[in-house]
Length: 197
Image (cartoon, rainbow, N blue to C red; front, side, top):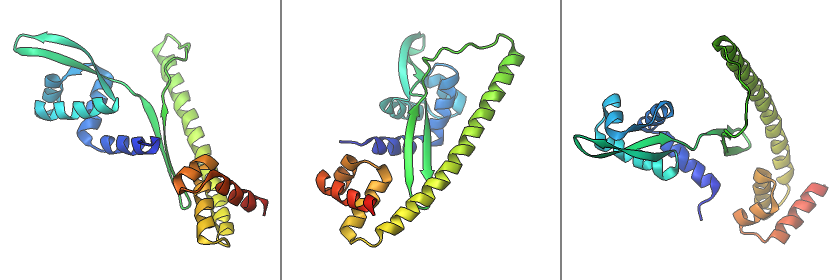
């Protein structure tokens, strides 16, 4: 069974390719077909088809229809989908990766004038920057807490230390049990003892 984390690493590997990223950017602006994308990017149609297949398998593009062609077979139209934010935290004491889908269902009242839309966009960018700054401050505190907890775990034997460190990554008894192969009740006993000291 593939874990969500494995899926995210697969997604990152796919997005690492410049051609695929360019395809996604283009398809975010307009639906298109392989030949048109090939001409726009200066890459063979065969190469574009290969990259579109990869993007379609992971759910970042989908076929949205077919248009007839006077030059041959009908052309498959592609559109982008699967919009999300990917967050990677990499610090001295932990590493985490998560994907947050962008929800488009929320109704938002937007102003009619372009100047007002530009101001709204600027306000949103500033708010996102403030959230990101606060998030990095919290991550630094989290890192220091984990470092202190890891130091506290050093007095335990290798087996218990492994369980404690695994638990610190996810704070979930069940997940720690699966990742370490240690029964849940044993994980619970170790963590209970650790947290009571």
